[in-house]
Image 1 (tube, one colour):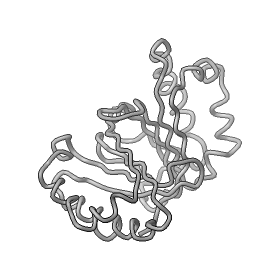
Image 2 (tube, one colour; image 1 turned 90 degrees about the vertical axis):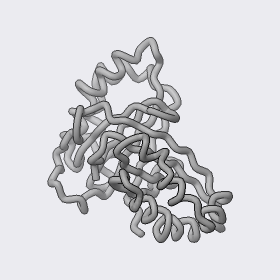
Image 3 (tube, helix red, strand yellow; image 1 turned 45 degrees about the horizontal axis):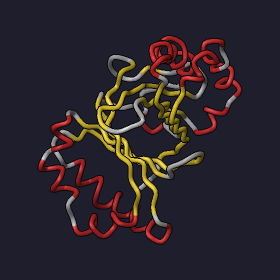
Image 4 (cartoon, rainbow, N blue to C red; image 1 turned 30 degrees about the horizontal axis):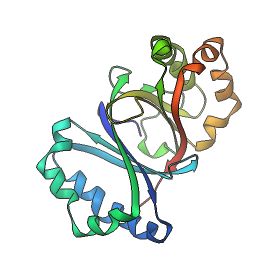
Length: 215
């Protein structure tokens, strides 16, 4: 469900097939519980791709950069099991700060406050052509996200800018099911003159559709 913190980091993960079962056990049985015991960690969730790549996305909510850099965090991740699994996974970490809305998520048509209703997640990560960046950001905040939030099946949306890592921007759409982002209503909401005008600004785009990964 939508983040309760303005500061999050996402870890894109691919795994060697022969190590996938063990890596998932490590995440669920040791790694995430250990991180959630660190002061300043607010939440953690895992997702698996149904469309696009990388295959896995780990989502962590923290209260500050000091939390991420803390000795307690380093101690939590420095374990023998971590050392055994790490060579068999490929990860890419980016830390983001929410820029839209100012606080909390933009509640969508399917918002209920029930954390169990999330069945899909669309993540769009990209850079923007600097010459078009202002128009690109205005489009996202004034038209694009408000319109998509009202599509049936959209729970909430929010957008982030990178503090460390890349791509620079990340837009996140919490859905009742992955198919929402392929619906006719979704396609209609993004088929606008402003959308067509800013599309050439997209650079280094990652678009992945996920579903929650149950432990």
